[in-house]
Length: 358
Figure (tube, rainbow, N blue to C red):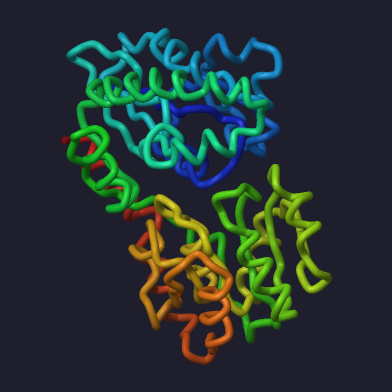
């Protein structure tokens, strides 16, 4: 069976890219088709993999402003030729599912989410678009075109798998398609349980608006408690200006340092709504509980009262009330790691193999 992999773009390294990395090891002979590839931005994770990029790779400034070129991405994916493959597995949150395959080629999409900026977050996306008003006026008709294309592209997929029940519901709403649920994996071997926790709380992720780092910063500014933040992003300078001296920005760290930070934290703070969210599982794999917003994929991975706590509104008041009531002695490191073990790589690989055989 000849297999090809598809990914939207490879110009960052996060949860989606970790999943693709696992699939590349599962199918070492499979090439990866993608619009863009930046080896440095992906931390060399795909060095040695057969990466096949689109014409967008040759355009100036595309790496920095790839979202500006969204209107060209449907064309980029439609130009790839998959005639020689029996199965194509796309890992997509936007345009990768829009590839064109012949009837005898099975196209399976591991859907990270229908594009939020085209569907449920479209109005917020336009209002936050950081360009002059005259440019903003051009965005709605472009999004309308892309929305029509995205719906049509969903019909090109033979079988959908969703990363969570939360995403499964959105696939049904926006595409009218059914989907199996296959949770992304956490690599337990990367994380460990340590001794007693230190006196800090932890946040991990890209410093972008929807991840709500500002919400936690407001709370920890008021409390004066130690908060360490791992990650980089466009909002870093803004968030640093907000933060008092009790909040430390660590930037990007290597895997060993990250594992140690998880293992010694009081708890992970997770205030955003994610389609799945691998970071809470990494914390639990390290024996640490999670304080999370009650929404999105977090409610499918965190067991309330056993591996974490939820707050109900994305407000400083709601988060602060739960943080102040947090008692680390209430949570067992072994219970946390056991829960993370239910999402290990072997479980993921077994489900993917079964799904591809559908």
